Amino acid sequence: MPSYRTASAQETEALAADLAAGLRPGDVVLVEGDLGAGKTTFVRGACRALGVTALVTSPTFTIGQRYAAPVGVSHLDLYRVADLGDEDPELLADYLGPDRIAFVEWPQDEPLIQGFGRIARRVRIEHDGDDRRRVEISEVDGVAA
Ligand code: ADP
Ligand code: MG
Image 1: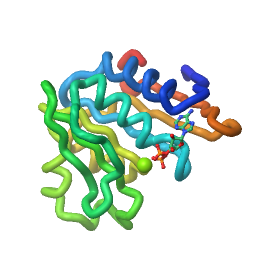
Image 2: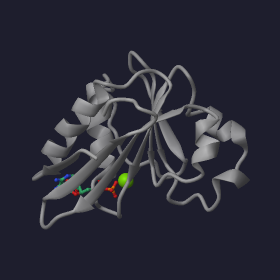
Image 3: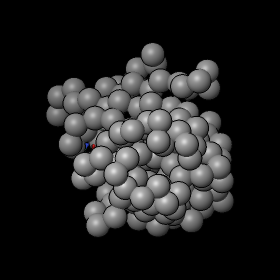
């Protein structure tokens, strides 16, 4: 599994931009890691590279945000969702779909997510001292990382 080390938020954003270049509509990227690991930072870098100009912050009062870009981008954070399966499936339909690229922090219920999009990458970010992070990016379904 490809593993990278970054030494700043900017480096993590740049790594995410590289990943974003290989994404296509319908792709879902799962982003895992502890609080403060840098998941939102990673998503921000990927969103920028995909042409999102809006400020990319953690979704707070909703499960996600939708950003306008040449290919629409969604950013979900399921941290506060106790059980995704209990939610109205239409909720996910607002954010996931064949025409969008989506990033999901604190992913859960992958089979449900897969009903709306193709899980293309799995990203895991871990603290590695101070501003250093270890970022593992794995390909899913034979899609090149
Ligand atoms: P999460 O979404 O995983 O809770 P955030 O991206 O919101 O994490 O916050 C990560 C914090 O860590 C930010 O304040 C960011 O600037 C800081 N940071 C420091 N070094 C790094 C790094 N190498 N990669 C990502 N974020 C970093
Ligand atoms: Mg976050």
